[in-house]
Length: 254
Image (cartoon, rainbow, N blue to C red):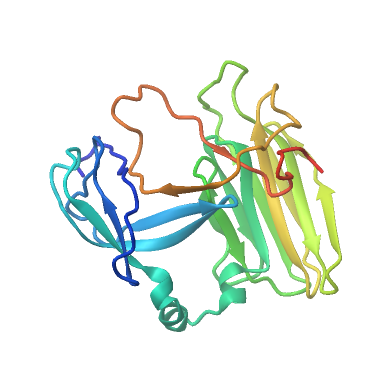
């Protein structure tokens, strides 16, 4: 796609004609693949976490904006064992025992997580649904978690986005779980401390504004995304929402 152009591919997922393929026929404006889209991912957002379900392998290519044909994605779960073997990973090491994510209202900024793992720190944006950063940390290692908002934010009718909560859930080897509310300021939340042996940890940066402080959540379900940006008719940056893993099914805090 040329610089400055954006499009979102939308279309129903058709009946599975092949156990190894996902077919999405184009039926709305802006629904076509572009040259170079081969290998791009079909992503579902499940319980607030982005899951790659398919990889673009075939499709009708046009001007990127005109409905044309269909997109065909290879189902990555069919070859999941081969992917893990090639990566030298298993389920536990791929997920990581320490993870950080955001919930509530998307905002410009970054989340950072690190320990003494040789490939950390990891960075991620605070305005993309499903973003998580994770790593396998060893017991006793120092951990560092940061959520930081950029100074220039797109304001809402209730004020600019701000950090309204910072939560750590620690699950010990015996299954005992403790949820800790950590200190934060409006544009920065950070944690540092040793990682308990045999434990797992999930950090969540809650983002909202003066009105939503303490009431973030209530956005559930599973969404499917194949997006390359904001649609042409949208003049403003879209509001991005993501549920909190600490919310109940009704969206209330425990």
